[in-house]
Every structure is written in structure tokens, then in C-alpha cells.
Length: 356
Ligand SMILES: Nc1ncnc2c1ncn2[C@@H]1O[C@H](COP(=O)(O)OP(=O)(O)OP(=O)(O)O)[C@@H](O)[C@H]1O
Ligand SMILES: [Mg+2]
Image (cartoon, rainbow, N blue to C red; front, side, top):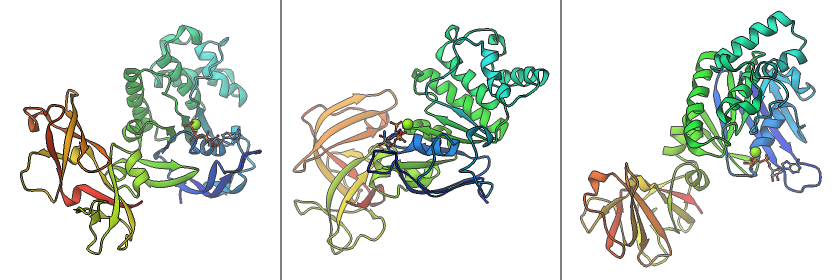
């Protein structure tokens, strides 16, 4: 049995007409790192607040260990919560902030001191116990917030974009830190982000949210390699697209009559409107050589050196589309110049067809 189950949960906020969460079902396994990923307004925070008990569902049931928890107040759900803003108490020291959840639970002083020390050790901040939050860097404040969420040894830790206020380097350090904590403590983590690379770095599984529903729930690798639909393909990783129709042979027929070969997904019958999706790293640049099922002539707009790869941006000839390729430097000893004619070529298995 899953540790946490959402059973057709809906949330309609008062005064709104569209549900923020729409008949959502989701099972979270004990010990897993699950990330809710999706665009702004897709219902990630609402889902987390429903789980934490700060919001009530309009319909459906949430179960912990098989027991409905709607009636349990937040502090009796055994869940530590870390929000986007650090939300530390400015007038309390680091140690007092971390001790706060224990004082709410009326834990004795000696045990509190021991647990606070252990939690600060866990986030590697024991030397800063006496400081006030404003005397800490952003990353240090975020660690204190994490220590405060861990100090009462919750079974589940919920985190809502906890790293979004940090710069890139600090964010990446904290991601590794959170991975380490998850490994060492074995606690179940539910993490919210709209940053797909953060989701890929941290998660055992990722739930891709869109308009209050889950489009796909899968491992990072499966999301990337086998997206369930065009939304997931576009949200997880970069993507080039073209609209068209499926013809009688299962090819994509472009508006100008050209045919392209691609992997069909689902049941796309002849005549169906479809979208072709190709990852930029699956594209090759050739000036006419054979070897790939598909070749699209294009006019180069720009070639940008990005250190580990070239990004070649080009307008597809005869089509209303601009695509880009990511090419390894050794694949492109001499980059094309703006205005050059090239071909984007790709294999049958490099392209997916989704319902439009
Ligand atoms: N208290 C509220 N009252 C009314 N509507 C709300 C409330 N909170 C959220 N919403 C609406 O519910 C929807 C989902 O919001 P939610 O905060 O869950 O999205 P999110 O995925 O966390 O977005 P973001 O990435 O911007 O944080 C949005 O349309 C939002 O406007
Ligand atoms: Mg949010």
C-alpha cells in the first residue's frame, strides 16, 4: 500500500469557477522523492497545501497509511513543511527557530536541545546556532528552514520551491544537499518546482501538472525518453515541433504535402491532426548526405557556441517554423553562418507524433 493516496481530489477555491486541482489521483510510496512539476497556476502549491492540511479539498479523499486525514490538523499529520520564502522568525536565533516545532509539541528542554543540535548537524550549520536569520546567507537560511522541518523527525517532508530565491550555484549545492538528506534519512519527500532540471536532478518520480491535473507521472528518464503527450514533451526538455496530419501510411503529412517518418504514439488514425516533436540533440546537420529517414531544408539564422555544444537556429524552408539543433563541437568543426542553407536530418525513432 502506498504511504499517501490522493483519491479523486478536487479543490475549488471560493469565488473561482475553474478547479485549482481537478479530480487528482496520486499514490506516493514510502521513502520516495516525488516532485510536482508544472507551469505557474497548474495546482502544485494547492496540492501540497491539501496534503499538509492548510487547505481542505472540495471533493475526494486523502489517505495516509490507508486512513483518511481530512480531519487531522496540520501539526498532527507528521509532515515537515518548507516554503519558498524561508519564513524564519527574525527575532529568534537559528537554534530557537529550529526548536519551534518541538515547543509546539511540548517536547522537554533537554530533548529539544539534543534534537536541535542533531538537526543543525544534519544541515551542516552547528556553528551558526546563535545567529539571527538576517545574519545568514540565503542558502544558510534555507538550511535552517530545512532543519526546522526535519527536527521533529517527520515521516514526510513537503517543500514548495524552496530553492527558487537562491542563485544558480547555491541552488545546485542545495539540490545535492537535499539529495544527500533524502538518502541518509530515508524520509518521504514531496517537492514542488517549475524548474525541470531541478526536478530531474532530485526525483525518483516526477508528476507533470497542467491545469490541476497530472499529465504524466514517471521517472525523469521515462518523462524525457517517452513523454505521454505533446505537453510533457514540451515541458520536460527542449523540443522542436511541426503540425500536420496523419496519412494512410501512418506518416506525418505536412501542409505542403511532404511526408515525414515518426514514431506514432497512442491511436492516431488516418486523417488525425498531429504534432511532430523532435529533441534538438536528435537533429543532425547535413548539406544533403543520406542516412536519415527525414531531411528538412532550412536557412540558418544563428549559430551560437555554448561551451559544450553548438546551438544552430534555422528557419525551415517553406514552413512556418524555426527549429534549433544542439550539436557536439566535434560534429561541427566549421559552424554555419547566418543565411547558409543546411538540412536538419533525423531518424524515424528520433521523432514522435502526438495528437494535436
Ligand atoms: N487562495 C486562493 N484563492 C483563489 N484561487 C487560488 C488561491 N490559491 C490559488 N488559486 C488559484 O488556483 C490555481 C492553482 O494555484 P497554485 O498556487 O496551486 O499553482 P502553482 O502550480 O503552485 O503555481 P506557481 O508555480 O505559480 O506557484 C491558480 O489558478 C490560482 O490562481
Ligand atoms: Mg506554487
